[in-house]
Length: 422
Image 1 (cartoon, rainbow, N blue to C red):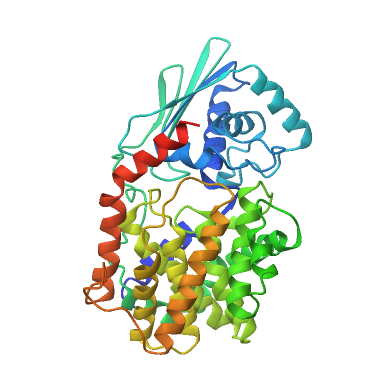
Image 2: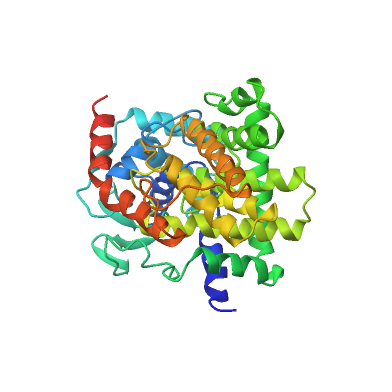
């Protein structure tokens, strides 16, 4: 199969567990790694962040931290209690005693934060000082992608990578197309993708159930169900939103992410899982459908980038809707129409950081994708020339990518500036 190894590699790169919102977790990881290099608790810390990191950390709860929010808290808990070798699960073993230490440390005002003027959407630089020694680490373009490490001015690790090249450390994605993704999902040896995708099913369902069973965030998931929206569409919206309710409010359960985001990982998977469960779809077919949904979301995000002013759950919901169409027996044309119908409806939803209202955006995006699915199954679709819809699915995806990556650059700056005015 053409590009089979690349498809599998992309899934393994993207579908990884993360405890908590990935931006504060990346800060915690940088804090843990810098402490590891320094060899002792930092007396003071300097943190530099790109605008999108600041935006996505401002209002979200850092997991296992007693409700603490913000860059200072994320770096401090990573430094004091994080596991530098656990990647995005860096805070899994933080204890209540550790939280007490973090709160005491934050009272010292020892962490200084500044906004880095950088081309990169994702950049974190942490410098720590203690006992006359100094350590430095820098993350670039990906939440776990360290490009610089040093101690006392001696370079311990360096990797050349341009700030604008988010894909530099990743498998090439330029070959991705809707048609190719469907071919892969239908024909790949299931044993090559099952270990990766089964972890997504297990983890994402667990946190979504937690969000429905208990009070988290703004309880968007519970609200959807309380409004009488039952059946598949209501359950898909409610479960996906509930997972975000829990995740954005510090739930200490991991999520398997997509395109660097737990909210996108939830959105791209839960509607597909819920449809499969309701219709008694065999496990193998569900796994193939999730390969389809995940790769379709990644395909859209390739041009948009990992962080932007464009809300990524739109891409994730679009992938989920197309996978549901595939599970329902839709043909290639109907799968493509589901993608186009979704993008024509909700493209332009802005990302104003990670916070409880992300759950509401997920509910809206899933609803739009399920309507798009129903339209496609009835052979109804939007047509070329209607807004940003083009005459084929790849051109439409590319147009939306340009809207998000080029047209919304100024929007991203305006959003950040308005958020910082609080």
